[in-house]
Length: 355
Image (cartoon, rainbow, N blue to C red; front, side, top):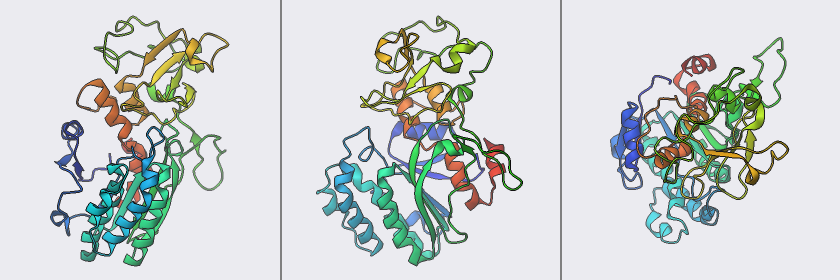
């Protein structure tokens, strides 16, 4: 979107295939074992988005129990001590310690004057770790901001809240100005007014005219087996239906959020514990009870991609379940663009043009 060159470190073969098809250079590796030397004096910006499963509400949150060990790993790496092997043996979830890996790279790169900026993203429960990074980056000459951002405030049709770290050696670190709001503000003499949050219906192209109903996955549902409805056999979605009769259930968890298509989605969750994201159309008068729904169909990877602000034709690789998993694990590109743009000399207008 922003026209810069990136190199990704990724262990999942299908995610690597997706990146290759999309034109991104990728090194398939276990980043915890990959050497840092090849990046010295070559990296202008570092973007880190460790796996969130050990901290996510969709999992067991063992990462919370492991946080003291991760904090020690971060502190030790910053001081030039690699205690990861010892600490990993004590972690309840081995993925927890991946949140310390950015410091291993930073410790190797910073003495040589690069990177100039750092961006990190994770689920909100990881914010204390980002604050620990901030404490260690400021003495190295960085301005640092940490906090929680809601992706919907930046035009993503999803109320996805994430812990963010922004650090820069060349400019004051600050979050991007919100472009959207749940309750939009009127135009003022100074500043740009915020637009209303983008709804699922808007993102998916469900307008005032007749549109196709939520589509089924070609070749069967996400969990396998025959399609619930043959492709193309669904009734059309009328204007009245587009105005709220379809609800999206954000995961298969017991506490899954239900939202009408006239609102942004909740955080869409995929994977073995949360892969059944469904469109629900309850009978009239039962909008809060999906169990009595007369129609129910799983979200498609194309719909999920649009809710994450990927292009509709983005080349995700693999079977439907794995495509959905990649989409759910990703940082919404529009959110990432707003975060990275100032460090690339670009403006909000540049992001909007690229989107």
